[in-house]
Length: 391
Ligand SMILES: *Cc1c(COP(=O)(O)O)cnc(C)c1O
Image (cartoon, rainbow, N blue to C red):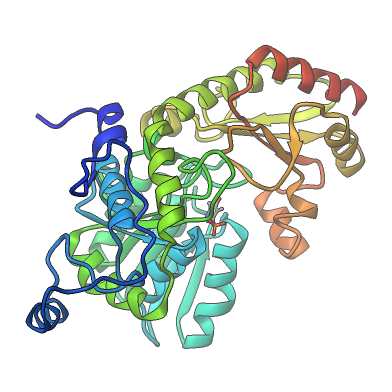
């Protein structure tokens, strides 16, 4: 029987050198030497699983991170990248060619939206955007020639939940590859591959590091997809992660489940504690009964994530007074960190979007996103209540 998640978080993918080190080693090397010219020749024809050529293609520390991620996700294989955006871009660009059609939900992380809206169309790729929560819109948009479907669920910052199983069912008819950006739901709370998705991408910068140090990303899928489609694209375009960053991520994975569980528990408790506050029009969290996809969230996710979103009745001024009054929670656009962080999306992460799109997505000037960290829940509750009083 396969070990459970906490055990795999600590042990999966480990490769020990001849010294038998306990902690994973950082193989900070660009290249590898061969025992003979014949061995070099053979390795360039075909490298075995633990044979390396050049760190842009692979590295033992990076491989440990990829194998541990694949084990946690239940994927056949994985390829790590320099950032989450390198993972997102490679998952799309390695598959698509001029003339192809893509369907995507429009509630996306800003840079993902930029790729789909601005970059892919430059290469003759047509992208149709849908409201991801409306299955009828997916049904209408996915065509016989749709090559890929892209979505983010839980979405940022409005925390929409998309029925991944239903979207996969629709995509199956046209043979489209379903790619899910699973950053907010984390590998701990949402099993995208079990729901029918083909490819899962992460910004490891978020919960996987979880302690605010390094950028990184990872793409997961079948061995066929990772080795035949993604790897040739990535190894020649250079989105490789540094072995040092991969090592930080590898160590982050050891505590991923513990951190995510604790952060998610605090997030739901805080959201519930400030729900109904007179200065707020709403408190959004997938596991609060008022959430518009509450029932779906409860079946698709084991927890509602580590982030919740609030909306101030009096807009930007109240939101800014709230942010400036926080003492423990920092003002930052990052999320998934051990430190609780708060952001005002309409003036920062989502500033670039048109006012129309922001309105469609519900990102008003009163919206504030709170990423919950590992601090004590009572201290955080007090900090939020004090800041709400000031707002
Ligand atoms: C942060 C983030 C990304 C991009 O990741 P980077 O590591 O910053 O490149 C992509 N998608 C989502 C949902 C994110 O939160």
